[in-house]
Structure formats: C-alpha cells, structure tokens
Image (cartoon, rainbow, N blue to C red):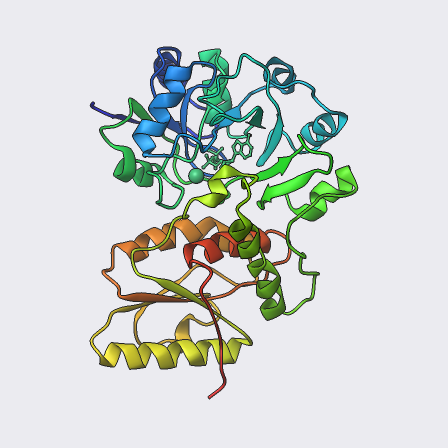
Length: 370
Ligand code: TXA
Ligand code: MG
C-alpha cells in the first residue's frame, strides 16, 4: 500500500486535506493524525473490520482495546450506558483534552474495538486536526498511538512514517505534538474511580472533581525527595505482577523497551551523576557504547558516552515532551546499555516516571557516593 504523507496546518487545518483523510476513514481505511498527546492511528470505531485493520497495521494483540475519540460531549450517549454524573463533571472540566474515561459500552461498539471488553475507553481530544477529522468523517474514531506495537508512541509524523509506512492509507503531518505523553485514563465503570494510566490530567486534578480516586500507588507528596518518589512509583510493578486480569489490558504487555537495556539511577543528584560516570567509564573501557539520559542541569558533568538531555529537571512539561523522541534517538546509536537519571514524581512527574520505569523494565540502581 502506498502511504500518502500530507502536511496540515495544526491550528487551522485545511479543509481539503481533512476531507481527503475523512474519505479514507469513511471507507474503513486507516489515517494517522496528530492529537495534543501523541499521534493516533484512526479508523471508524463502529466498524469491526476497520478496527481489525488497526491491530494488523500495528502488530497489536487483539485483546488490547482501543480508545474511541469523539468531538462533542453528547456523543458519550451514543456509545456508553450508563453515563454517570462523574463522567459529565469530568467532561465539562477537562474535555476537550488529554483525559480518557472508561465506561460501560453500548451494543453498537463492536468487541473488536474494545478488545472483547464490555467497557469502552472514550476521549475528546483538543487538537484541531483530530477534532476536524472526527467531525468531517461523521464517524467516531478508534485510535491507539500510531506506533508499531512495542515502540515508543510517536510525537511527530516522522516517527509514524518510520513505523507504519506502507501499512496505512494516510499520515497527516501537523508537526510535533504539544504534550508528548499519552492521555490519563480513569476508570468510571467501577464503584471507586481509578487511574489506570497517569498523564497530564493529574490525580490531584481528578480528585478536585471526584473527591476520591484510586491510584494504585501511594502518590508522592509535593516536596518529597525524588528517591522516595521513585520508590512509590515502583510499587506499580507489583500491580502489573499481580496480573489477575489487569485493569488496562495494555499494561500487561511488555512495554516499549529501548534496544539497549536501560537502567534508572536514583538518589541525590551528585551520587547519581557520580555513579553513572563511574559505570560508563568502566564499561567503555571494555569497548561498550553507553547512552546517558540526563537533564540540562547535569549534562556538562558527563564527558564520556552518548549524552542526551531531555530538558530542565525543573520543567516537567519539557521532559514529557522530549522523552519519547530521545528514546527513539538512542535506538539509532547502536548502544550496549543506557543509564538514566530519575525525575521528581509530583504532578505530571508520575506520568513521566511511569513511562520511564516501563522503558527500563523497572531496573533501578541506587546512586552511590564515591
Ligand atoms: O493520548 C492517548 O490516549 C493516545 C491518543 C492517540 O489519543 N492514545 C493511546 O492509545 O495512547 P493506546 O491504544 O496506545 O493506549 C490505550 C490504553 C491501553 O493501555 C488500553 O489497554 C487501555 O487504554 N484501554 C482501552 N480501552 C480500555 C478499556 N475498556 N478498559 C481498560 N483499559 C482500556
Ligand atoms: Mg500505545
């Protein structure tokens, strides 16, 4: 299949370009498009054979459900029943935006879209291209992240092209996405609302509306030291390990892991940089190629290895924005191992460390003073 790559204005999308893409969606074909979080791979959510194409193109296990994207709050009623009061409160507060809600599905949503579940994940994205594509196609659009299964989510069209060229009808190139990490997922199909995936809509923000929300981890408090915070995050491993029907089926699959094994080093900043420097020097003497994932504040303290900063450690939005790009860049470098600093887990830091811990297969090393 020849994949059409078309640029599109991310603020005022050209309607002739949208209309061509909408034509493919109506026809049951696949179109990759930018959202405010990451690029999505879209298909008509209510047609089983369209959803099946998504699984085939991504190489995704068929029991890992898709998120259905809508472009008006009322569409909740088309696909979910009941629509609880909490869902409406959250929708009014955070939609359009990076929040996905799990609700009981109506019969019109095929099991192919929900990976066999009786619940459906729903999100109303804020990106103008995503909204216009949904609107002009007249469809609700099922869209996972537009990467091949096992790769980091794409934050620009180039990433999508690398993974899916030849497998999908069209890619809309709206430039780099704004946020860079996938949406927060909150499960409202259960008695006590629960966060299944942390993101930009933080636990604190959800609690303001819902009162309580289960997090599955004991969330670090503001001001808590990063090393304690990483420890709290690490408890997520236990949730995954329990594996009695994981709540977000996507969580049970091995997540993206860089080609070279990655290890996170935690502790006070000097101990962390010292430990990474020492290990890098030792391993490079043996002829290895080591990648170092660090922050602007510490980049200068590394003189060996392939050093990449993901931004200032005081700007969590910058770190979130750069994480997947930097991980993809490391895969181009033919490395034997990657060592990474850890980051504060308050606010969206939880989402950042959640993705980093998965990429590192939960390998953490304490930073030790020399
Ligand atoms: O920001 C995002 O959410 C992006 C953009 C494209 O919207 N989409 C995205 O989709 O990240 P995906 O497929 O990569 O991740 C969806 C996650 C998976 O972990 C899946 O298991 C979970 O949502 N999920 C979907 N439906 C679910 C359901 N009914 N119950 C529990 N988890 C569900
Ligand atoms: Mg994904």
